[in-house]
Image (tube, rainbow, N blue to C red; front, side, top):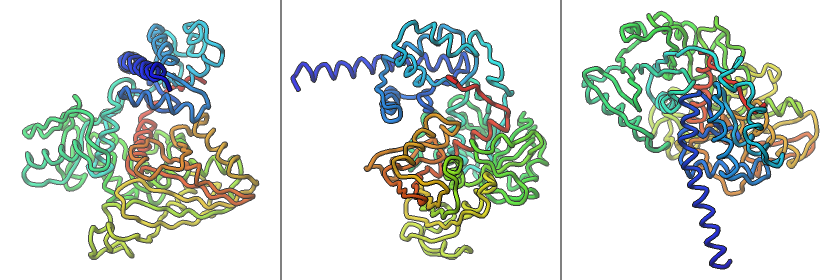
Length: 484
């Protein structure tokens, strides 16, 4: 390549960087002033860096088979600013591809046609709901990640307000608050928190990116009156896993200021186990206690759903290769569970999982068709589910992957199913992935009626994103998604 050609490539990159820099405040303005969430083929552009935006444009080539640059999307975003849009999730990537495929033309006329439902604030069924108080009962791995996601989404039309966290008393309040803040600020797996955290020991609050969060010290729900902190009609998100049945979780509803409870673990008894994207619409106003199921159930159910819809699942086995968790011992010690007393950092630990049986709570049509086991392995995050299935219809790996790729792009499961087609990816590449599960195309095996599908998932962050989506559903926060 000549020197001039090299210079041209670099200048093109700099030009794209400059346009991405100009796009960031426009995306932010759409979010804060119009409650419009701009996305790139399902990937949010809110509060993203220049490099992240450029990488998301690069991603389009993998899923859509066409090049897309910031030169294509910037006019779309700029044109949206002038239209006084109402609340919605708008995929500017899909709009740009549509505009490009039709040969360009008048951007404003194109946008008026595709976004007519929300122009000048007109939004039938676009966004509903009122600001919703949320309390995190417990502040461990999932609790802190939920806080990160909710704080990131604060503002615009999200409507969820993280008002308080509940933890057990630790004696020295000032020291305890500093430690809580430090654990939120720094994370060995997910990296530093993107923002500022201030501690007020006297008020017992953490102010995180302008969000004032009350820290409530209590050993049980019976000790708490949320109205003392001007919290009312709140959804209590129980991250402790101490209670999983209606009787135990019902303690939260006895607290003044609490209205509903959401469990971040599989629920027992008649509690609805919800996998967002699959059965979230079954949540009614009368459902006061809901479970977000498990991280593994969330990862596999969307993939199983689309496979069953297209090919029919006769039966199968789910093997989970799971990162170790706080439930295991760091070194060998007593544990009430089989095998879990052995060092998590030194062993692969075979254990039971209820994920396969739990599938039927979200997908009743698969009742009794799946078995499952789990192997805990010495990594702190990102797991894999291996779906070994017998299908009703025959297929091959190419056709199966093509179908799953399309489901990850243009289906109702876009935020639940991701798709990767690389022979070089490993578990750490999926830390921070917001999807419930990621299909690894290179590992897919399919021959006739038999198929094996490998699904990665960030069992911490991806699951937390699913929990927040359920929170929005419980709070009647819904958005129109455009283009149609």
